[in-house]
Length: 411
Image 1 (tube, rainbow, N blue to C red):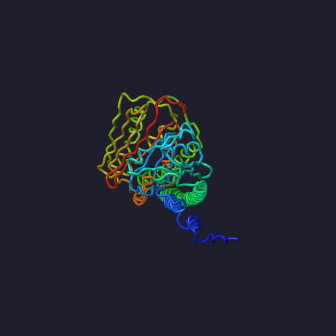
Image 2 (image 1 turned 180 degrees about the vertical axis):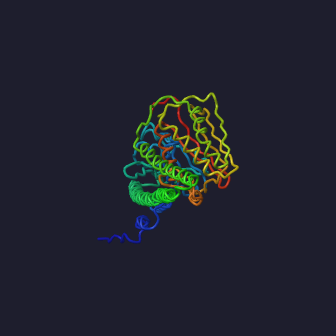
Image 3 (image 1 turned 90 degrees about the vertical axis):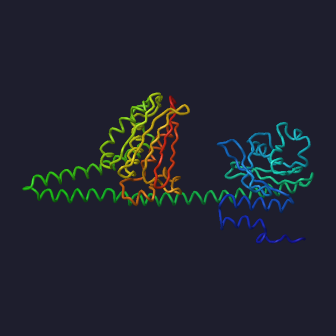
């Protein structure tokens, strides 16, 4: 009886070994595509991944066509689209033959062949699944007819299964990393919160001790009491922010869900920020389009959106700088924009700004009060009522935070 070669040291083993090395998606898929070419004797192999937002298949790995952006519609007018939508593997001896004999919806999408100057004749394709969900398609191609056997098709399915296993474990690994990162940020937040509360409370205690000793100096005693009130307000503001975020996260309605005039609310919020802007020597400008339609939203939560974005812009803008608050109609909705000429955000940190407990490194280094939870609440409020948020920024030159809300849409 012929002895099978040991699994260790084979190309299949090297795919699984990647679990202990890298778990990045693209290198794993490239290794699978290269092995598909070797095992099936294919000239080329392609891995398409599903892009649901654009309803297409994107060639993430395309051996032999590197550097070419390969995209095809996610429909039945291509073999890859058919495999993805039906969840069935396929082996075609000649793509120029009658494919409708297999399925009347099946077509060969030859635009990619024309794009890269290649003529596909025989083809094997199979779905790529991760956690039971189809995420893409693995294809093996050859310019000659009848190059793939039934055994080749089974081998390609096995490869796709290995790839799915690797990507599944990669996903679990990433989930663990994300959980660890959340726990780390929670610990950082607790430390920050302890510092933010401890410092003003200690100051209040010290000032109160001094005030009790100033019975014979009413002016100095009055000054100390004013500082006590200021410090107490800081603690109250911090606690209120934590409660606000907690209510938002729990999905509570604080006011009434109704049509809200956002332009008028923006103006009222800006007036409430005049003292902060004056202390910071920052000029606040309003650009409110009178044609702005109302948005249907919780009138008890939406003021938080304006106050958070505007106060952040003022706090992170140096004296002499400018903050602009704009409200205008856009694409069946209302666009809120806050521009500032402040410190900006480091490029690599932009994607983290709307994550819990996160504050940009340059913001922390300035010693400005904040918990990093305000933007999280803004995002939660906007998305609850069908909206979106975003940010553009240039380090050292300023930022633009925006919120888009739909008009007259039930939550």
